[in-house]
Amino acid sequence: EVQLVESGGGLVQPGGSLRLSCVASGFSFSDHYMDWVRQAPGKGLEWVGRSRSKVNSYTTEYAASVKGRFSISRDDSRNSVDLQMNSLQTEDTAMYYCGRSHCTTYQCPWADDYFDHWGQGALVTVSS
Amino acid sequence: DIQLTQSPSSLSASVGGRVTIACRASQGINNNLAWFQQKPGKAPKSLIYAASNLQSGVSSKFSGSGSGTDFTLTISSLQPEDVATYYCQQHDTYPLTFGGGTKVEIE
Image (cartoon, rainbow over all chains, first blue to last red):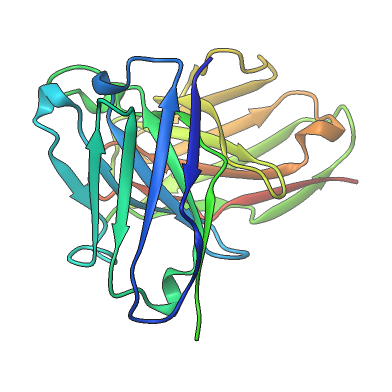
């Protein structure tokens, strides 16, 4: 059974930093793209960024709203993908979800690049 | 960025009724559209990918259709457990984007 478990959420002051982790089990983690998606309280879903798989050189993509402040890294030996969040702002307050892309191939075609599993989320609150 | 516009933003229907949710993309997305269900306080659940393909384990009462810029999610027979917010998402280009959501309730 595929499982994704996020951790590391909490309360942080504006301008502060926080690191979220997503630990995976039940599948070959190193083969898959892994993403972060967030949801502000009472709002819709917003894609944050992704880490591609080893065969794709672990390259990353980010939403414009977090580029330069957030970074995604992964450790295939621990089956984990981390989201390092710096210079946090109140508008970064959200539930952060880890999502698995179905993609496992080199230069995965978009038709195969869809989310198929999600974690339960980690709540990040940015407030003074 | 590709904008996805969902309609309606909310709806209520009778148990057993048919529900249709629309999602319009601001430009063509080659049928690379997914649908998700999110129940209150829960994580999203993947329902459909590439416009019309059912995710493994998802009930066949859910179906997706459409092409180009206009897509539809249909629930064939609404049940109380289907009360949720439904989102579309394009998986065609960066940044990945989501629709604003459609809240589905029972009349």
